[in-house]
Image 1 (spheres, rainbow, N blue to C red):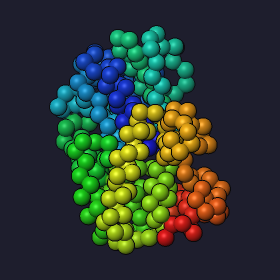
Image 2 (image 1 turned 30 degrees about the horizontal axis):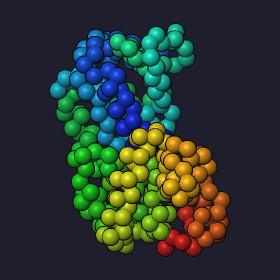
Image 3 (image 1 turned 60 degrees about the horizontal axis):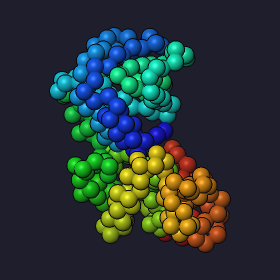
Image 4 (image 1 turned 30 degrees about the vertical axis):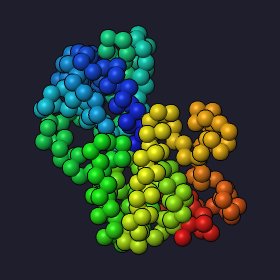
Length: 262
């Protein structure tokens, strides 16, 4: 499932490409025909991201809400677009660019009240200027749920997925099985600061990078795929060499070092 940096990257690009345009929408697959008709050629005012949710604003009362889920994908291109092939839920054709959307978990038209209901149930998004980290700390500090589960809970913090979860906890040396109420506030502040550093880098580079490129004598853009991460899907801990533990936590596989994380 795409993590928050990917969704913010799409929002950034689509805002640049399509804002102010009267986009031609269609549903080649046929599953969003009526919705496409309602926004066809209406001026797009803004594109925004909140966690893993995308919102295309056409007016204060009409939004296109997209959540990619596990299988959803965008393909954005310069015009002309090729002839539709396969299950394209939504096709958008602007003045110079267009996109195809396939397999989203959600693709729906909502009103302002529904938009607020979605955003109100989400935790703070570190990539947004309005993020209130104190809301996340309040939830974590009172919870007996393992921190490895809380980080994936979008009602606690928005946009963190399985890769960032493992990397954040490894860098801060926190055992993913520790209860939220056992996390100290300085530890939480360290986690939040890492989010503020890593997620914007993910937006800029369009990939998750948690390793320090300077230590390898490189730039983020020149890192090999095998060099970008600290512990996710690694066999051995980069710090102590111990075997990396793989275990199920919150229905996802967590990677951690039992020796270094406590």
